[in-house]
Amino acid sequence: MAAWLPIISCSLPHGEKAQDAPHKRETECADMTPASQLKGIKLDGGWTVLDLAGRKPNATGGFFSVGYIVQHDDGRKGFLKALDYFKVMEQTNAPLLMQAMTTAYLFELGLCQRSPI
Image (cartoon, rainbow, N blue to C red; front, side, top):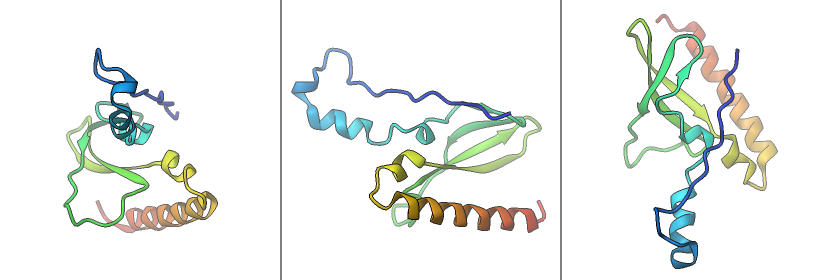
């Protein structure tokens, strides 16, 4: 069963007005997509999203995804890659990006299926 996640809205700190800091609101809300808000979520199959996976400053890729460290109820830890379709849909070439994301996903899925865990 798939779990539907709510879109969590972004707001300014208490007492701050939008007209006083329009740039701040835009900056704070830039990464407020569903894919960036999975920390603490319990997923079907016994996995819990623990925290964001660390990224090195010079790391490439990941603009359309968010990495997380997850833990299974039996203690196993793993990596979750949450695809960020909201960021894709903001692009002018969204259909091509969706195709590229799907191709990359299928490739990574194939690697996982062939890899002994």
